[in-house]
Image (cartoon, rainbow, N blue to C red; front, side, top):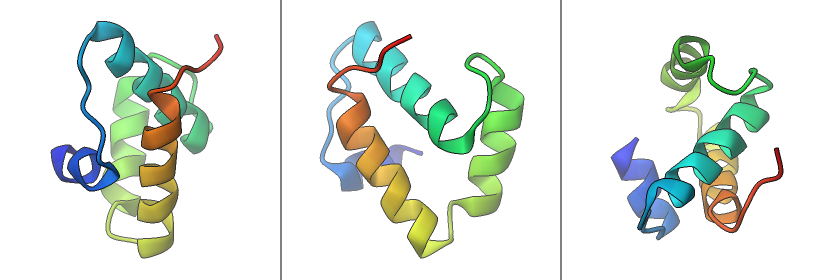
Length: 69
């Protein structure tokens, strides 16, 4: 996942940044927030798909700017 975050050009400076990105990723995958095992399972399956990777990078860029609960 670090490679995708680096490719997004995002620096997760604090816990709030990490939580915002985490929530954004859960939303992208349509997985309830805090259901980490399901989320990671989906990411591992889809990470090599270029279309998904681009969406994931965009979500990471935007997610850092804040995600509503």
